[in-house]
Image (cartoon, rainbow, N blue to C red; front, side, top):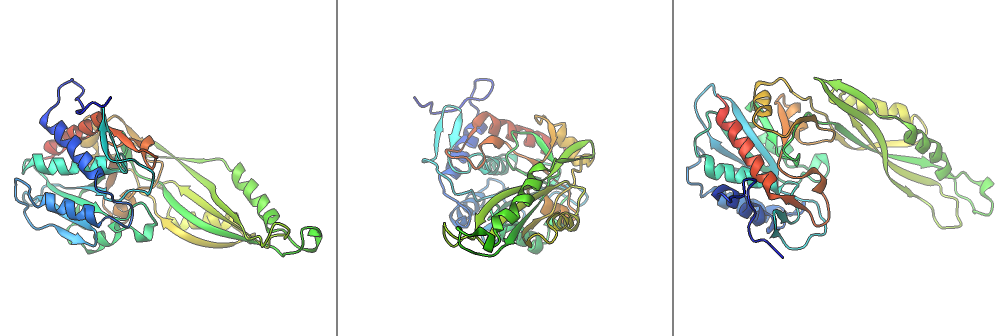
Length: 372
């Protein structure tokens, strides 16, 4: 049996709770798998173009990404950006639907729940915050670092480099996640020499050449770094492997693996690459395929401290990569906070809990109204 409407924690359904649920269901009803964000971007532009309080300046569009100048106060006030990606992973989901206290649909957790909060804040805050407030909706987050549209947006937009704090609404169960891990992907190719499998001594098996390296990576322990009182764990992991064999009776002359290195915020991209090179040595040909820098926590930033006191579920290190790193590269402090469920991200039949979305909205509203 389906319950047509969710309830708030108090048992009463408020107009804002209704709007949040309806907005999340609307967002999930517009498919936006990575590379196909145009329809959703168009819909968000249209909706935000009809806000009850006129925007101080027009929405700026870059490809299928937009920057929305929501509130402009006067010189000297802090400038906050709320940031969310429009795309979802390609996964198996049924139609968008509302069942009991959950919204189901691709991206319900990652991260259309965050987008719903951003949109409803825009429709309900008016010009109340005593800070400048900008919304950023962008495309192609769920893919390689180089194809993510937030990069070009930050390069081209005239205001985003001057933001005092950016909040990326990635799913965090309403925890405040600080900093982020860096991430490197490297393709390692182990070379051998083919021969008939009946006479393996005549060749050199590339799989066997890779075996010692694979065992070495498997034995590596995480390396802990404590930064601003938060614990991050650097790791090396083999995530893909494929042989270059020419047939089941041929000793393979190539074996290829993908090595993923996740590194702590106090490690530069260059130092992380050096670690990978030192580990591999001359045992394989190495090619870096994706380079994503880390970001520091900014735990003592005044706006971060204020957000931490606004009712968040807790404060923890972000032990994955997010786009806070793009802001950090520009010298802009950024944090992760969102109402989606971490465990639901990238899942089949993705969903998120409506009460978490309601709470996330309340926390951000309380925080924005407290900034002075």
